[in-house]
Image (cartoon, rainbow, N blue to C red; front, side, top):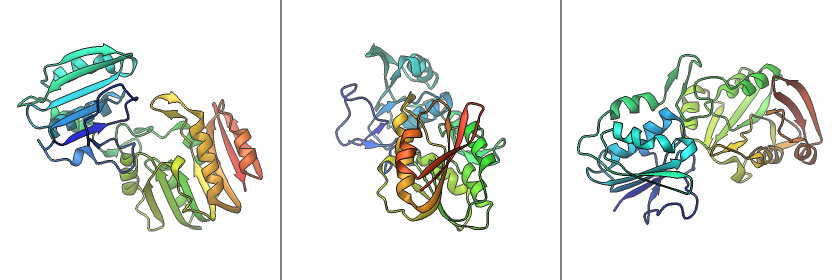
Length: 301
């Protein structure tokens, strides 16, 4: 039997089929659910995302890939879309058996012979050029349909960079586009944990100086060192919950990547206390702007 798992449920929350293939785009090395052929799998377990377009896209991709009559378990925290799962699945033609426990809603369905509304939900959640960005993006990617305000402030403060660099958490590549405007930049490596962002960045950064890698910055293997610069807008949420250790890991990784004298430019929400880790990892750290709830920092090794 072929089974797929989307997401990383808390231990003991659900029974995960033996040998289930991970299909979450946020887990490097996972399979792409959208690339699985129609009616090819026997079971799906989906920790549904909170965003409506992203959630519907994942659910219909799972229904498309399941064999008729095969079981689908979709679940989510009640306050992060779980209370809407039943109605959503019924809208796709499913008969739903629902239960609630541990602050989650669980919806059990069998793939109907003829699901409805799949094409529309796939189109709404698919990657495409977003007019406001003039760039490829996809629902579910961070700030998928607009330039994040923090990144905008960092772009406004960036000097003309040069040499070899990296963009940690590069997203769809909007910050990297600003960096690459300098002809003195000889190479740029973008790292992101989201496969969808990586695919969009590869569209948006059609430049021979660029390499995009699907990777978790927290688990970077130190194969990229001696850089002249690093730019980043570090994340501070993991699964919707604030996690300040994420930004701390980004700062430490940036310091390991840089040569002596190299520079890191980063933006952070004003309330995030990165000063101690910056002081420990860098020779100097200077706030270049503190406005609009964000601080832009230049840190030198």
